[in-house]
Image 1: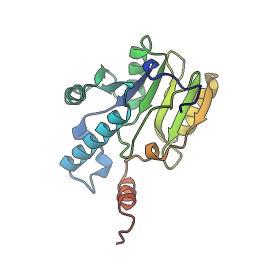
Image 2: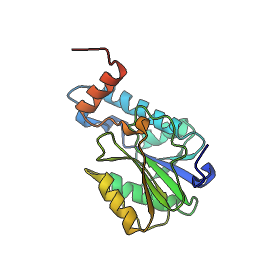
Image 3: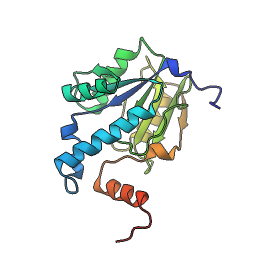
Image 4: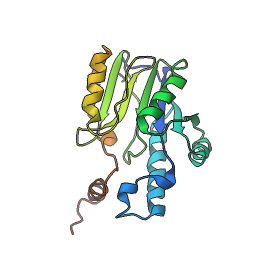
Length: 201
């Protein structure tokens, strides 16, 4: 049963920022060629979109191919002019603020994502950190506040500070399926080890 403070799905929007699939995951180039990186990025992004379930879901992008991909899945697109994650999310959040009182921002590189349901809570910033407890994989917060997005190294703690500055409640949620992301070769190795724990080199 959802906690009594959880929002109804109809008042929460999910924003999934996605950049050009062909340029995705360049830090994995020593392990994967361009085609494999693009395939991985598309696969993970589709998993995150699926994990949104019945929530109103928007892909945030400024790339026509990504927009076409999103529409092929029946997902709405928020087209942004800004490059960079923080400016793009700020722009997208402003576009949907009049439509929804709450939003969830989910990274598109969560290979084990199962559900984004039950995360949103009234007047609360909810954060699902990465498995290293440094980054922000999923961020849930009210729309229309002065909250400034702080994605980048150590974003978990900067987002916690923003929640306090905006006088919003704070929840840091440990949801293992949402704490795995793929940014570096080490992440890729850990993912393969998790998938096949009996394998040894």
